[in-house]
Amino acid sequence: MTVKEILILTAKMLGEKQIVNLLTKQTCDDLQSVSEDKDMLLSCYNATTEELALEYLPLEFCEEFNGVTDNKIYFSSFSKKPLKIVSVCDLSGNKLPYKLINDYIYVERKSVKITYEYRPTMQNEEDEAVFSDNVIGPFTLCYGIASLYCLQKGRHSDAEGFFERYFSAIKSRIAEKRKIIIPARSWR
Image (cartoon, rainbow, N blue to C red; front, side):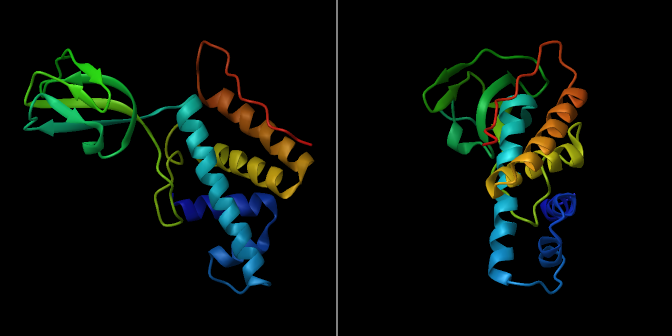
């Protein structure tokens, strides 16, 4: 699913017909106000995906580096923004020792595969939605977006209802032995 499809689904949940019209290229009233609301919804999407990735379900990426010079792989050469190194292996999958030093990884090989957790980048409407096709799914994502959107719009009781669905969906979808703690949001 694309981000636009997630936003349309969320706008339908919220009863925001004008945002749905704008996203589906239909006519809408007060284009400027509706555009601002759509941008707020997109901002809520990005905040929700970042929260999910940083707090509950880290995003992992495996990247191959060939021709390593001076035994250093700079973080700036990674295709995504690394948060945590999960493993460093040779091309056969054997784990290798490494050292994390300020802005690079020190390895004693010329070719390595690095698996790491990363922070999702800000997305726009045409991008592929980050959590829509994995264990989280589109509806859990929509509940989180709707909760933030309602909170920003001052719809506190709606925000609380969507937040409860969001929290419940995360608990049921992420099977962990430890208790999940979601930071409280202010409803007043």
